[in-house]
Length: 184
Image (tube, rainbow, N blue to C red; front, side):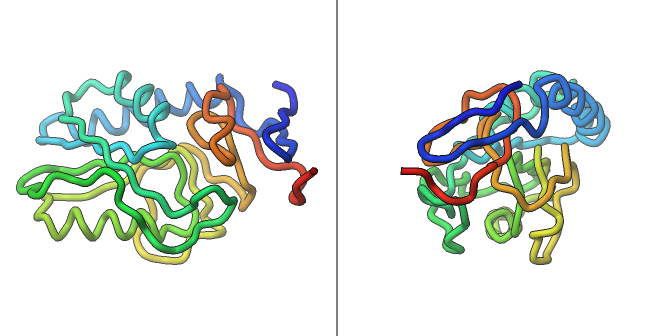
């Protein structure tokens, strides 16, 4: 893996495709044991989690119903704006479903906390989170993800579904920002 330039910043390798694949296999095994006999609704959070969710769910042995949601708190920047915009909604009732929210990254935890609250208000039997990346040093309380691929430092990262201003989602590995200041 080599450094990549996206828009106006350089990014260096952080997690290789092989490391990601190995961890996904481990997570899929854990999830398969936990959800084998439960009516599960897997809810990938678009846009970032689409690659992770696809690879993860294909490795699981249970058969979930799958429903995508899309929320946004970042816009085009590198930090969360703190407000959540629902662009693709949850079903109105989650009665009796064990909801598995699938996230690309949990940093402050504010976005996923709001999504959890909505699931609980819609009578989900349980709500758990599987996150590829978790920034435990940035987490601001509440319930951390139950299933974590990698705990990473508070670096801005791209690749494997995560983007910088719409770029880099298709990178096979995860990359961290090298230069914090944009280049013109």
